[in-house]
Amino acid sequence: MKYGLVMEGGAMRGMFTAGVMDVMMENGIEFDGAAGVSAGAAFGCNYKSGQIRRVIRYNTRFCRNQRYCSLRSLIRTGNIFEAEFCYHEVPEKLDVFDTERYNNSPMEFWIVCTDVETGKPVYHKSVRMNYNELEWLRASASMPLVSRAVEIDGKKFLDGGISDSIPLRFMEKSGYDRNVVILTQPRNYVKPPSSTARRLKPLFRSYPNLAKAMNNRHKMYNAELEYIRRSEQAGKALVIAPPEKLPIGHIEHNPDVLREVYRIGRNTANKYLDKIKTFISE
Image (cartoon, rainbow, N blue to C red; front, side):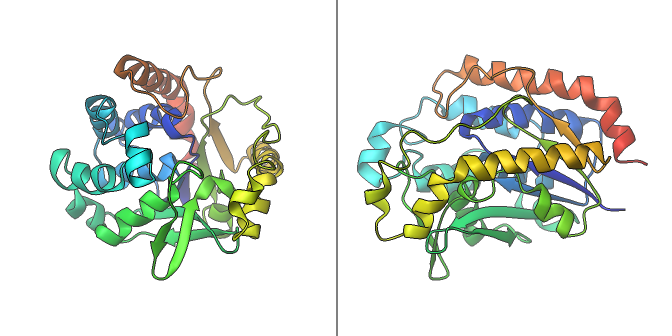
């Protein structure tokens, strides 16, 4: 029996995921592997490195820093989250990522990105953290329109949530029999069609498959929610979701709001703690 962890994205809604993660790590809950999408990857990698509270710490510390996230950064660099600062200066110097522990951990970690040319998901197995792996994390969390595509090994990638927002099916196909799934929307959420994807299609004229994936994202997302429900009913998945819509947007500069969403994640995880322990021990 192999146990997996699946982490949805959602930009700063990922602070909910951070709260859930920290409670599980504090209670010694281990997984054989994990898959993260967007913020679920950028924050979720700290599970493999075992760094409790690192996500809430550096986000509250830097959320008002214009190099971390700002319109100024978007204008100057093409990325609302400045690439060099967020994905290299912070983890390498300012709030150091535990590379050694990450590399020595037996836990498999998958980073989900979207191939700009094909519009299809790419599942990158991250084994040893280094500059290139940090670029994979950046690619997974590079939201369209406010981020440049990230080029890795001659291919361009964007946000994994465009093509596979909640990769439970991938984890099951990869041999993970039981999976804890952390969502960042309430359980009754239904994703509506994008009001902007079709109008923005001309901007992606060079990448028609990406434009198609963006336009159909609500269909993919809602189909994945239905798949998750079936897996949960079959006893193969345990879903942890916010009790109601989280009081946060994609971008947040108020550290108190970040702490509140993190607290909601912790409280939700504590309510599920006994279920989680039972689920991964049967």
